[in-house]
Amino acid sequence: MNKRILKTCPYAKNCGGCQYQGIPYERQILIKQDRVNNLLSKYTKVNKIIPMDDPYFYRHKVQAAFGLNHRKEIISGTYQPSTHRIVAIDKCQIENQKADQILMTIRELMKSFKLRPFDDVSMQGFLRHVVIRVGYHSKQIMVIMVTGSYMFPSKKDFVRVLVEKHPEITTVIHNINNKRTSMVLGAKSDVLYGKGKIEDQLLDHTFRISPTSFYQINPKQTEVLYKIALDYAGLTKKETVLDAYCGTGTIGIIASKDSKYVIGVELNKEAVSDANENAKLNNIDNIHFVNADASDHMLKMSADNKDIDVVFVDPPRNGCADKFLAALLEVKPTKIVYVSCNPLTLERDLSILHKLYKVEEIQPVDMFPYTEHVECVVLMSRVKD
Ligand code: SAH
Image (cartoon, rainbow, N blue to C red):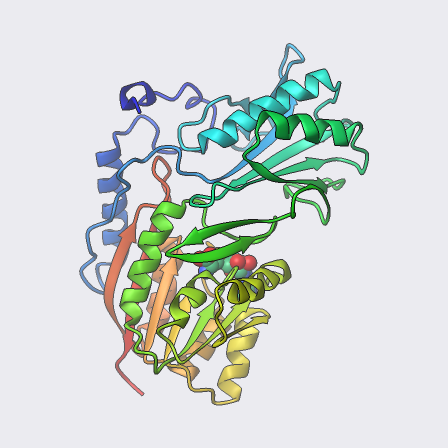
């Protein structure tokens, strides 16, 4: 790969995807390290951030909006920040290259099939978004075509030609989103080709991924991240473990072979169904998943005086709810391993957990090169009863 060519991104002026465009990668790493140090070093010394060896093409989930440019040509790309304008992108330097090639084919096929992009002002037209998920190890590919109505003219032929051109595609899904919303996926889906899901491997375990389930977008660094989280947990097959905000059950399933029993909690029903399937796929029977709000389940565990030794917490960007943290302090596991994608909410949550817990390790991992985002794994151990 020629890194020299990649240094300048032609879309940087309008696309807000990469806040750190134009900054050398080594410098980006220093900025992230400083940011985490400034926020968290009051708890303990922050370890050196783990960078990516090759910080390009790491996004294995690619989401593109479809529209027309001023010459009425079909374009796809991301929205310019704070606007409704689509920045046309052909080749993005952080997105999986195969996914970008598939997007290009879809734009071409739309022309030959006379399909128009959806216009969300007039609410007319056909294609709104395309979401592509690529398995890192499995190389399986899911293509989700999001349209503004149930109509998909010549869908059989469209899918046939698309798959002929990209035989790597293992499933194609038609998702219908007919609402005025900034959400990409609508509630209804129809499988047009394949199984409607893909599988991928992480740390020698297989995971099924459905269209709406969360799955880390940078699988290479996810393996790095999970290894650290497991290492921090220091499991010895004797522990009862809670995997809170478990998604498709990835962390809990990987931890299960070193645990006595694992409970996973997740709000998204489709992700829980994937998690159950994933336990079966990996022949694991010392795990079960609960489809619930993490706070509600934590409160229940606290009310039931449940003994939990280790809790993995991996919440979305807004961090943990206050009532989740309050209940966690009641359940009082020996160790908490907090995986965070937002150092600001991590800092807020640590300031609460700090009452009972000592922060032992803080390990930043760069999962999102060229963006301002930084992931951290934190190990806390209980110091008071
Ligand atoms: N640990 C998983 C998922 C982390 S992403 C992994 O590494 O893949 C965070 C997850 O929290 C998402 O799956 C999201 O659906 C879930 N989530 C969001 N709010 C929640 C809540 N209030 N209770 C339980 N799960 C929630």
